[in-house]
Structures are given as C-alpha cells and as structure tokens.
Length: 231
Length: 231
DNA sequence: GGTATGCCTTGATAAATATCAAAAGATTCA
DNA sequence: TGAATCTTTTGATATTTATCAAGGCATACC
Image (cartoon, rainbow over all chains, first blue to last red; front, side, top):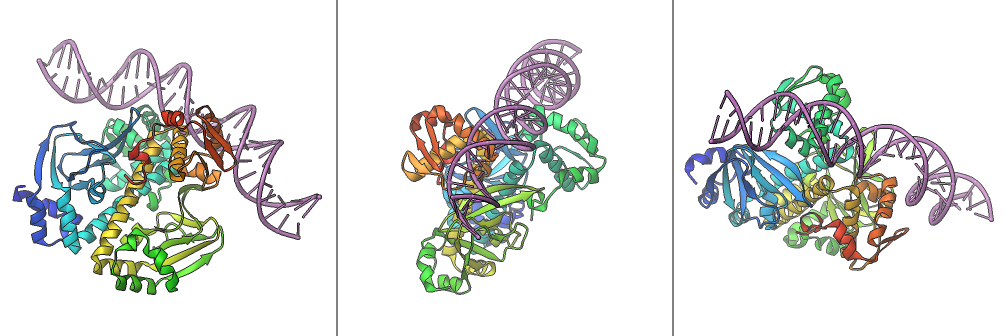
C-alpha cells in the first residue's frame, strides 16, 4: 500500500493510538484497490480473509435469505467493516457491494489477529470499536422491534438533521435502500413520507426540509438509547 | 465473593485462560447476590457500574420505548451480560430482570477495564466474546428483517431441537416472552403454532414435538448465517 | 375447596405492511 | 436527442400483524 494513504487510515480510532512500527507492519501487508460501482466486494458465508476499510465512495452491507434481500448499513469513508468476522476467523455474516466508485483498503485478517496479539493499544482499540458496533446493532434491533415504520422514518430524519446540523439536508442514500434499511418496501417509504407531511416534512427528490422539527420530534419521540450513535 | 464460585465462573470462555492472579484480583472486588423472581436488576440508561454474570436462574434482557416493551434475550447460567456497556463505560442499552430466583455475580466495571489493560489473555477473551455477541445480534436483525413471524417461529423450533438433541423438548421460556423475543404478540404466537401444524409441530403447553423435522425444515429453510449460534 | 391471578387461546375486527400493476420522473448511454 | 433503463410514486388489493374482548386453563394462595 502506498504510504500516502497512511494518514487518513491513521485517523481511524482503531489505528490512532497504536505503535507506529506495528501500524507500518500492518499496512505493509495490505493493499488498496479501486472498484467500479455495483461490485460485490464480499459475499456472506465466505471465509473472512481481509478486514476492509472504505477510503473513498460508499459501500452497502446487505444480507439475503430465501430470495429476499435487506440492507443492513451503508458505510462512508473512513470506516472499517467485517471486523468481527476477522477477529473470530468466522465467515462473513453480511455481503458488501460498492454503491459508487470506491477505493478500499484490504488488510489480511491474519495480520490483524497477529498484531492484535502483540500490541495492547491496538487490542484496546479493537475492543472499543467492537463494543461500539455491537451497541449500534442493538439500537437497530430496538428500532425495528419497538417502532412502526412511520416512527422509524421520523427518527431517521431527525438523526440526519442532527448529522447535517440543519433543517435542510439531502438523503445520503437512495430511497429504495433507505426503505430496505428501515425494514420496509419502497412503496411504503413513499407513503410514509406523505404520512409525515402533517409534521412539517417536505420532500423534493433527495432534498428534505423539516419545517417544524419540534413537532416532528413530538411524534418521533427520539431516544438516545436508540438514536444517539455514540451513547 | 466466596471462593466456592470460582470454578464455575472460570469455566466461562471469558475467564478460562486468564492468569490466576488476575482472576483472583477480579473476583476479590466482586460479590454474589441472590435475587427473588421479577426483580429489575438493571435499568436501561443507567451508568454501567457492574458487569453481571448469571450463576443460577434465568435473566431476561428487555428494552422499552414509548410505553412498549420487547424481550431481547434470555440468559441462563453461566453467562455474562452488559459487557459492551462495561467496556465503553456507557449507559446500559437494555434492562435486565430476573425471571425466577437468581444468583448473580457483580464485577465492578472499572476492575474489568483495569484488568483488561494488564492481561493480554483477558483482552483477547473479551474481544472474542464481544465479536460473538455482535454476530449474534446481527443474526437476530437478519431474522427480523428477512423472515415472517411464522418463519421465525419455525426456525426457532429447529434451533431448540438442535439444542435439545431431540424431536421432543420443552420451551425454555414462557410463550409470551417467546412471542416478544420473536417480535410478535402472544395472540399471534398462538396462531403461528397452529399455522405450523401442517409441518408436524405438536404443542402441548410447554412441550413441543416435531413429528416431521425434515418437512418443517423445508418450510423454515434454516441458514447457518442466521441460525447457527456459533458460525 | 375455592377464589384470585395470570397466562394462553380464540374469534372478530382494525391497522399496518406488502404486493401487483401502471404511470411518471430520472438517469444513462449510444 | 432519443431510446432504454432504473427509480419513485400512486392506486387498488391482498396479506400480515396487532388490537380488543372474552373465555378457558392453570397455578398460587388463603
């Protein structure tokens, strides 16, 4: 891997505080690849030979069963994925595909496990990252089980508002993927947007405007234990 | 904590390979408590002062939002819970209550974090445990998003069959809790059991008999990436 | 034993969500 | 530019799931 990528990868919490020698060792065995849109990077069930890092573009994690498919998450730079499978040396539970042109770093799983054994700082960082991922999936499960689809959408919009820091923002993903992420069909997402109109949700293509966020929050009842990505 | 508990706690993967001195250190600061049934051990949102270990009885993890409640998991000895919150020093995402009389060990979170920093073996074990937990929640999310409630029940029954190693077994939890765990109402669970009768599912109170597991599997289409607790 | 309580089941109904079909908008690409 | 393709929306309908109400069954407790 070219040294030029080191700084941005270093910024990840996962690598921020590890010894420089170990970091270089890890990167030496890794490589960076460019992918066109809509390429399946990994397939669920395959052995986890590499930990992946999205450097550019966006990557969708999805899962399939019995001819059905659901979107689990969309990752944007700089983020790692498939860490748990790497750690456990277990098969991938989710597939991943590029949504646009992507640059992805591939770190051999056995190197990750080897450095983990030698570098306490790295081990701590991995634990922190895993615990964060775990908590984020638990929040997602709570969202799915405790809320209707309308409530999930309302809370999603409030989270995007917080992320953008503005009452106007663009949806970062296609609506049909958003529908799948929220556990609904594209048709119902369309109707759900209409259903939120009384709470001041204006939709124009990708552009969203929340004209009365307080009113929307009154309906959505956001909760940090479900909606706050950090807590 | 009395030394007599050490062996059974030691058997947990989490503690199996850590240095004996560290283990004793960790246990010294911990204590064991008995609880009557239906006691709320922890409440979601509270700071995570202790990692918990069920030694006897069963404990339900559940979550609430907006007056609704859902069962997330039921734990039986010997199992830890609330590890991720302990590690991140973050609030509990789930509440826990005893279902019957329980014996629970409480390990101060700061001790867990301190020993984690000093004992590489323990750190490795924590990572393995967290990765396992993470993967189990991902499987649960896939189950919820990709399957209907009838399919979820069918696969649950096949998992219980594998666990029991027999076509006849008893449901380990109350039906209303099972309903909640599977993301449905008690009424619908009752109807779902009826709906599986054509596939050889016989129900008598808690006792289940699968008279044609192959036929049931043909309907349920179990998949290791959702249903295998280890893979 | 009998009452009380809680769990489970059943039936009727309502609400939520999915499916199907078609049209309207975007976007891609030759 | 225009054809082709894909996404989004809309309406009609079907399916799934939840809610409400009532009754049956068990268990716990006086």
